[in-house]
Length: 125
Image (cartoon, rainbow, N blue to C red; front, side, top):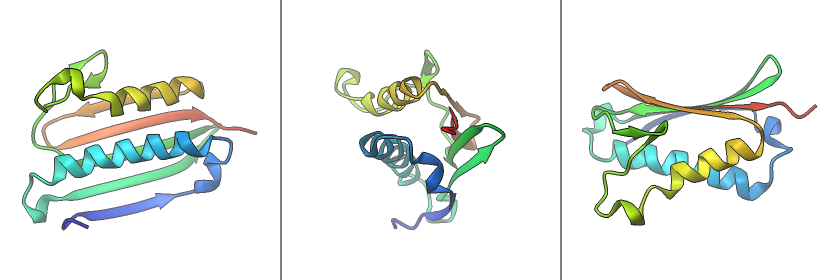
């Protein structure tokens, strides 16, 4: 677990209307980005939390992790800190595309202590 304190509270049934590949891409990219950020921190600061829950008529997905460096945001998405930007940054764009596909909203924020990825999707009733 790379010394990461990871807590999850998720109601996976809420995502039953989504294509499995979309679920994989959304969570895979969100978690990969969080893990990459945390790997550069001391072990006692490696904290990550994931929640998937129902809020009124919406599905709330929230992934947060400790992050001491505020990334540069363009169009609401953090920009890669890796070498050639043309070769990176597809993960966050993929998350945004999935949110759009399901009529949802994506918000990413960082304040120098915490990075938060927040997705709101309409519930499938």
